[in-house]
Image 1 (cartoon, rainbow, N blue to C red):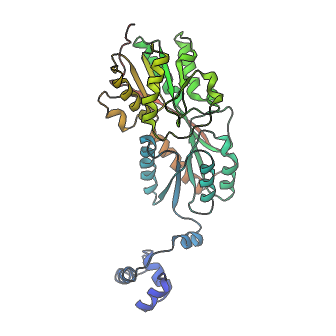
Image 2 (cartoon, helix red, strand yellow; image 1 turned 120 degrees about the vertical axis):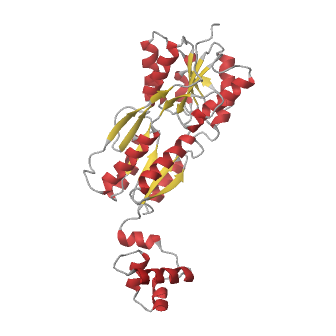
Image 3 (spheres, rainbow, N blue to C red; image 1 turned 180 degrees about the horizontal axis):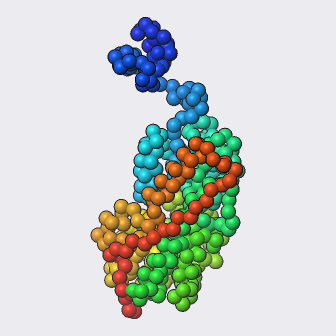
Length: 365
């Protein structure tokens, strides 16, 4: 049977209220008594009942983070930054990895049971979360969604949009200055509404600006769970099932680049949707006897630690991880401390570009 504060009170010969205050470090209990009660509690094997405390106090001092892929360095770095910002306010993080889809929705339903005070989620569709976000709102639990916009219009959800399209545009600008024209966008996590995403908007804008025609050969999509396959051309995106998170992005890149080069050997530069994906691309190119950047220039996305660690450091689209984390956590505390809950908040955070060794002058065919 679990040890309670009443058991500790009997041993110490004091009231259970004093025990409770001592265990919670209330200053009203003198230091000597407080330490004695805490030592007795430890010797008896006392474990606090956090669920009961949360029920009584009306809060848990926990913020849930629902992340789709903890293997991906981007999400690991986001977690680190978010946790740091929470600790500054004496809050802990509850981390749940949940793939997009049915399990994602189930995880959100579980969090509604009072396991946390609010949640930050990554999503590929803000609008799909409107109903569940409303359930959080009526319970006074902040719900903040982060993602790349892949649909038209604004959702009734607190949203932080990752404008990766701006970084893609900067990457194309950089590659064109280096003489590249045969540029391919390499994407292993397309969604059903990819045609409306800010990624594709940035790509179209950049190609148009430089007088380049965006053709099906310039876009390479493939399902994250089918990395030996691959299809090209944006007109095929609607035929794809929503792939969710990539379980092994390095394999996606390794097999995908071989498929790409078989079908479009004129390629001189590739922009990929993650640094982890481009690690696989790099491995595949080496196996084919192609050099980076002498034969092929590479641009990743995320600007995580991996981009700085490859033998040829990776030029990468900076997704502003620290800014995303600090903004999301700030919004969470803004919500629980008051404000207009009926008016959804929205911000767009532009990505940037960090130039390293993996991009060079285009090879003349």
